[in-house]
Length: 127
Image 1: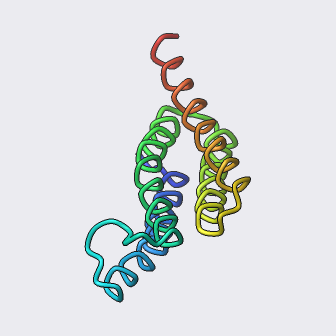
Image 2 (image 1 turned 30 degrees about the vertical axis):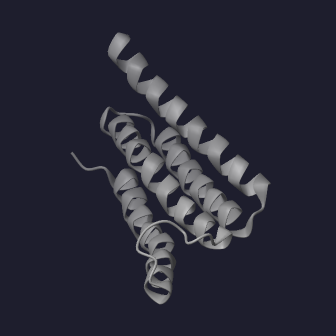
């Protein structure tokens, strides 16, 4: 079964993860810091943006893909995918810049996507 919306989301997420990871890898190389942040708060925020993305995005993509595979309406699946994409950009920007509202809004939107997609999946199995 084709999953065009989830495939697009997963592709964009893969590219965005590289964009989040490259500055971390380059900083580690430049400072010879193989573990941790070396006490650098700005570097710590970049590490956390990357790690938080890795912590939440895979399950969200899986849940959205299962909603799409299960016949979820295109507007719902697109809405979930677009919300997740916007949420992760906001969250990363908020962490990198130190602007708390971006981080908080990104986290809340990510939680919303997980709750809606998870709820749809549970409902589909119980209905």
